[in-house]
Image 1 (cartoon, rainbow, N blue to C red):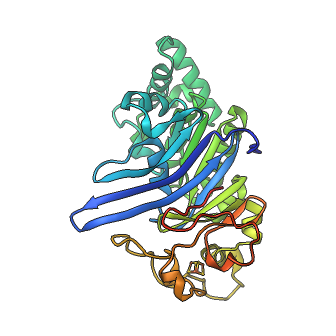
Image 2 (cartoon, rainbow, N blue to C red):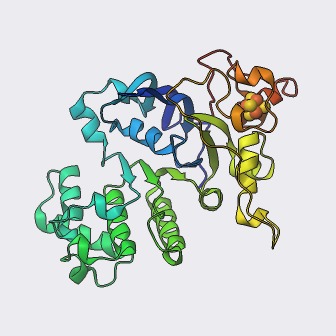
Length: 345
Ligand code: SF4
């Protein structure tokens, strides 16, 4: 997929911040998250568990429940500001223009409804003029497109009668049958056996190529993103650390966190050597970090990193990094500084 960023982006997230107001205190879960996603483009959102990838996706769809709250930012999709829409207006966008494949397909499917009917009902909600028979015919075509064997027979099964891989194919059918402009795939293979993970990724890629959807692929696996995406956004502790074209970031990572993540890939480790891990743990976001969120784990941290939030620097065409190490080496430094400094891709 090759999206063009010369056109107006399909999706633009700007300065997004999310808090969770808990009995233990306020969790600063997302801070200054900014990025763009072009028409037909495929962008990977990567980082460790808890870094805010899925939360960013949920914020886009406005499915964050209390005590979570979006406290700042703009999310523009086409010509609509999603955070300003009524509940009914955002419901019309969910599933129709923006669809999301969840990690656990069986948790997302209705356990008491036959799977074929679930796909057909998705279509009928999308197009209210569609009759039951026509919807079921299209649903069967879609089951065929996601390589469900004997769709007529399988469509009559309930979710608990399906394997994890089959359930995920049904989920993909449901999410793509309405031909959404944007597909968010949230770790779509993490609950599946490794043997079928590649099949599912290939399936998603093939279908979105046909439909022409843009994709936000959420994964903790840089390898998956490298295989499927045009660009990558690396998140750490609720903020964006680095972004750029996949090949550029993989071959020339500039943020110490990205460099550490790449060292954890099995391919980067010599045979017989122990697996590499980034020292320390993700910070407790109950207290708003004063400086760089990666500072306590960063092997190159300087004093100021613990006091000041790093701005964003251009380190190459379309390649940006939020790290003080690039302050002097980047003549094109384009960042703002201070609390609202964010990373725009
Ligand atoms: Fe490390 Fe400082 Fe760069 Fe943060 S700003 S990644 S602590 S060097």
